[in-house]
Structures are given as C-alpha cells and as structure tokens.
Length: 111
Image (cartoon, rainbow, N blue to C red; front, side, top):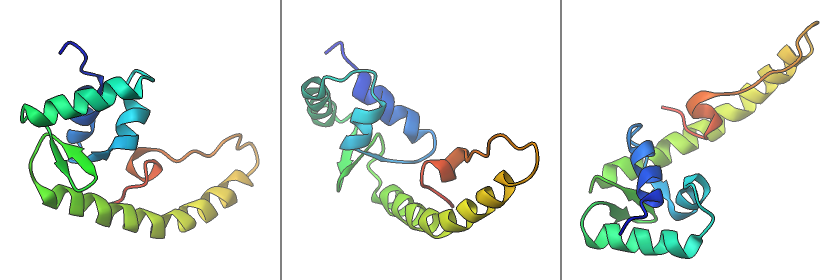
C-alpha cells in the first residue's frame, strides 16, 4: 500500500500522545477520498501498525491515552468559556485588531 495519508495524521498527533477519531483522520489527512482512508485504516490495523482504541486511532495500544485525551477534552470545555470572556475583554482594548487562541486549548484539549 503506497498511500499513507491516514497514518501521517495519526503519527502527527501521536507526538502529543493524542489518539484521533476517524473524523479527525479525515479532517487532517491530505486527501478528500474517504474510501481510500478507510482502506488505509483497515490495512494499518491489520498489519499492527496502528490500533483502534474504542473510537480512536493510535500507534500505541494503550487505552490510557484515550482516557487522558477525554479528560483533557472535558477540562478544555470548562476553561474555554473563561478564555472566551478574557478574549472578548482584550478585544475591546484600543488598537487591538485581533485576539486568537492557539495551542492545545484551540484544539479542545487542556492538561
């Protein structure tokens, strides 16, 4: 199999110990051919290159990574409303043209 777009997306997020869902694989892979990505996922699982842990994909067969991700997603939801309020306040300052959120929190994750 020459196509590795699904694997590249999974490996990128594995740097952050962040298993990703099939939808996220589709969002971050460099192709819009979902059928091809499905085939890639099936192939890499069969070959033991990646693992499906509940609804998430990871190169490590470690369910604690999914638990960590879900806890971080919940924590980010709690913090996001505060970040939004602070961003709206800062946006009112004179000469401020833009306020942006970046990093893990922008992706919906917080440790």
